[in-house]
Length: 196
Image (cartoon, rainbow, N blue to C red; front, side, top):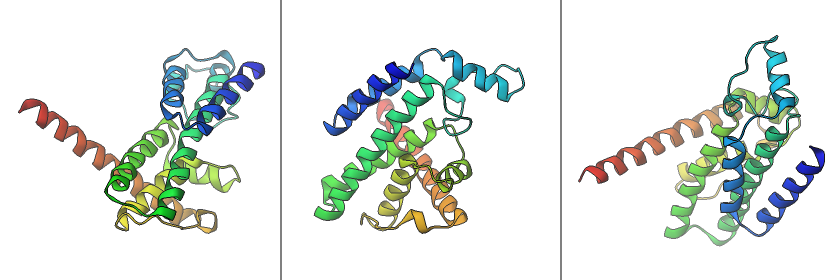
């Protein structure tokens, strides 16, 4: 598995550097739709003391040791996509946000929300994961997009490393709530347009 993972990560890195978001999204969808690998199944089952862990698509990518192949593939893909969002935000901060940038920022916010949901973890679990010294680009991308939209489409330069857990968790929960509402509005609008 370690050799396979090495090649998968090299692929993800190449697609990340080449800004091929669509290829990484495809890999993430394949990994999510595939069968669970045995090491992560056994780990999840052991955590339940022998119970059935259910579908791997519902298991947290942050809890446990994360030793399963599919867990590592999904984490690599979600992290790469989140890093692409953060890189775009840095460019937008330097160049400013025009009408096209506003649309791009909104799309990034929706993608960051989707990536955060794929972690299958609560805001508190995500913040605890970050504060344990591990990077979590998915949460940072979601928070930065959220704060930028809330501040009138000005890209935030806030440093999340200096934040206490409660503040970070509050911002993350606000971002999740705003993104959920935004997704529901978009879904309702598309249904309304479909009926017209």
